[in-house]
Image 1 (cartoon, rainbow, N blue to C red):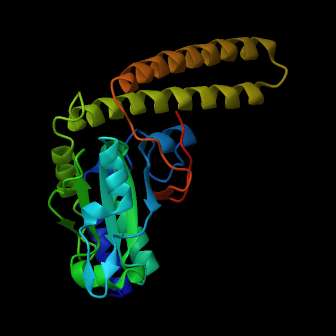
Image 2: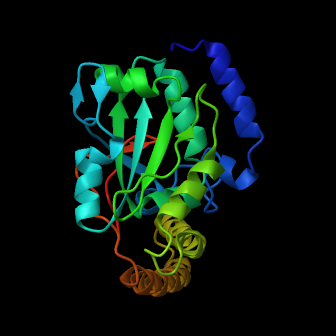
Image 3: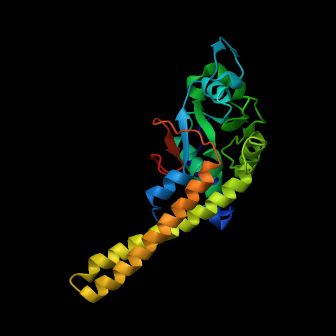
Length: 265
């Protein structure tokens, strides 16, 4: 299904209808401002490209038999699959992903899952079965049991529907509950981003102070205060994450909705 530029315009209209926090990516980063890499690595959405389940002609096995899902279930961890058609218009797909993954809390929720992306253009039997519903997401619980398909056919963003399925899959697995963790961790991220911005501004002011010893001494105090604040916030994060058992992010994972990135923190 190749969508015209009109689909992008429609997508923009959907974006404008989203809450302001989702439009700006949350976290106090502001629209149009590059967020610190330390923040992007914590709230960004990362998926690994994987192969679909085994197929025999037009017959294809259940999505739960996908290697990523089976491996996650073997470790009693959560997983989610994202099925898309790589033959669709790239700009439309990327715009859709930017809108879908705009809010921090969804990225945080997905951080608790093994995330695999399957290209239906490379899986003919799977495309025959799911092509009319793609792009779509399916979340799996710790036993590898699939939840309801979240279809976003026509590239219609349904972030809330996806979040609900993630939270359903995580019921009884995570403590605190997934929605609670995402909300609390998003608050931590906001605090960390503010501390990082204060540190950045202090360093910039210090560089501009030149040889003015009085100004440099004042700025050094602000810098030390910002660094102390950052240390306290990171200690809070360590305490929060000790209660969770987050999957390790593969080196091959790609960031969706904003380019590539690594794992931080």
